[in-house]
Length: 426
Image (spheres, rainbow, N blue to C red):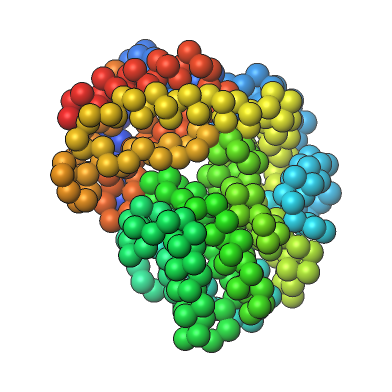
């Protein structure tokens, strides 16, 4: 791969990171496996950053894309688009948001960008509340609300952002509290913060923080926040780019773990719905979505070919109960991973739900992040034939495990064994 790697470095920006000391070129995939240019097969436990949601080369999606490509690939939102309307109808119905409208984009970044535009226009305010350790994309507005220094290259922003406690359960000033006390303290922090600001447009939150290392608050935190927000007219944006479509197993959307006070005002999605095609989008109440008083279209959002992929992928997901599979096989996998991590001094915590599992690594006997250990396990797993991810706030020391939702029990057992062997490198 050295030839292609050299060419990559000559034309691609330095900040476009590659995994592994000797980066691999993935040439094809099938099911839960991929192959590199040297013909080596890997069990894929990261799915192109949680994007290959159902399976590689899923015949139903491949067929839908090929058939649509044979008819027309692109027309833009200036014309009626049957696949876009059909997918919007299905997502609106699944969203839980009453009188929902759906706008399609090409990525999660663009979806969150659109959500921020809607919220600030609707509320006539540029103040945003975000969670510490969060990640919401790489555009100018979304890096400005990202609460993770490793992914926010500038403090310049069109928005004034204030950060709220609550996204990380086992670190920070409230870590020692019970779940009920944790929620009470975070709500008190929110109330105090609102006493110091002008009108706030919205709070944006990932139900499970993705890039932040699969951290999550106790169930019900955002419902408790919602009760406070409603008194002030502040909107709730649920960033479901990584948690949507049943990945957490227990719920179809991450917000449903916090749904006691109703659904969010705005929901953003991307990644898994296209199973690798560039699909993102925003769901919002009609009055919020329709508040834009200027022309706006999308050239590539909702293209016929990506909508065909999304429809086929969503149908497969629902017909095969992949949410249930994520719950069942994910429950098995996390227990196997916990067993593999038992006795490994560098492992601080194994956490997650469904097929969204994180392993936090620290310097043994301390609370200090251990990015060297994470890099070591990442490399060792790859040598063993397993692809995983990494992330985390403060420093990149959390292994991220998020296989396609069609993962089998046998593959879960195999991957856990590979991971256990990689952890022995520590």
